[in-house]
Image 1 (cartoon, rainbow, N blue to C red):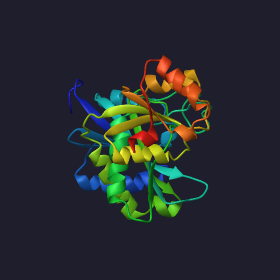
Image 2 (cartoon, rainbow, N blue to C red):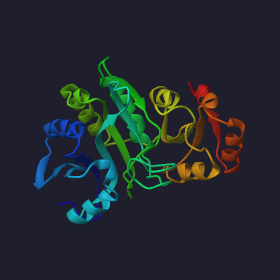
Image 3 (cartoon, helix red, strand yellow):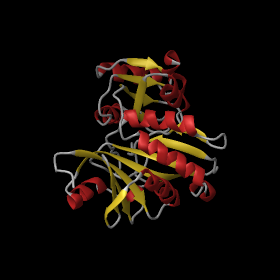
Length: 269
């Protein structure tokens, strides 16, 4: 077993999630070996298979660190994505709640982001995806609450998609690509809708990695902006979807008064 000082990557799989189990079956093809019941290891990564739904597994990383005597520097959640329209989609985002925690986590609390993971996931999904699936970054939303920088990579949005072997194979490859990330310029995104078309474009077309995203449907207050900045794991600039931000000039001033450069997304694209 690795020493306590060696930092590793934790991949979370939920037994209650068909997409997660689908992805897991393809991850095993990369040579992960069982080290104890529900734990598998390969090189710098451990897969943990948990019984609860991932979005409700608060502080799961710390619990597993204690169980295995391993320290993790990041958590990758292999997960399903749900939507009312059931559009086939591959998505990535940071967990957390700017407002009420209706789907796990805690009210008004964010997890630490991994901006480079969001970027790499979107790029790899776009490279590998079939035309049947859309690829998009999502705004920050849902649980669980974690103490370790985290990212969700997801298959959506129906049961057929969750069980789609090709989609599972793609997301397994995406996850493998997240195990050796290179540093990028890091940004917080503000504005736009839930599926973040501007920030998805930034991920695909620039060298900037976007972590937390405050969409237009949450309260874009100084408090929420500060939370995003503090939990982004580093911020080089703030990118605004200018037309997609209510009271955009006021928001821009708040960010600048906090000491951060503001760039309009369209200026980068």
